Amino acid sequence: MTFEIFCMSMIALLVGLVIAFNGYRLFLVLLPIWGFFFGFGLGAQTIQTLFGGGFLATTTGWVVGFVVALVFAVLSYLFYMVGVALFAGSIGYALGVGLMGLIGLDTGFLAWLVGIILAVIVAAVVILFNIQKWVIILLTALGGAGVLIGTFLMALGVVSVNDLGAGAVSAAIGNSFWWLLGFIVLVVLGFLAQVRTSQGFEIEAYENRI
Image 1: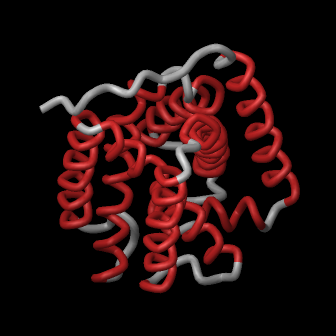
Image 2: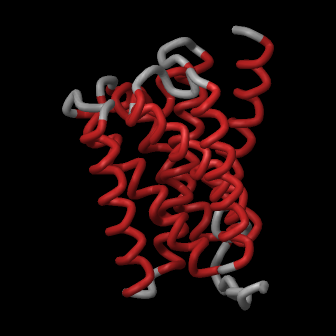
């Protein structure tokens, strides 16, 4: 393991734990951070889809990833509902790409397109039915567990850094009983912990900050 991978793993583990077990209470703080990372991954994977090559294998992928990341982070900070939509959409996108990975289509335009479609659907459902609290708790538990398992997979060499944006984590979880079991256990523990700590606590949506 290189020093860069080690540092990345430690940061990812901390982020994953915070998201999985305390995501709802810290949601307003996490919104722009989540928007940044989702935007970075989406921008970089879009470049990979359009032009080929590995995830973050080109300078263009890095540049576009950072630009989209900054845009999503700023929008999430300024507009609460936009942040919620991006948050829900990020999980929908991950689920879409992950499902394609389970059937062996984890790269290419089709996986990207399915991810985008599910992102729009999940974001629309969350906003239209006003089920933000439970969705936030569930999705942060899922997202945090995914970050934790993905970090272990990367640290152990099961998944390479170049494959992180191609649904490889979801595919690895789906192909291994033990990784799947670990993921489910983390999701359940994170969900139950958040339900307990958020009793009587409701997020106060902020007004648009411009």
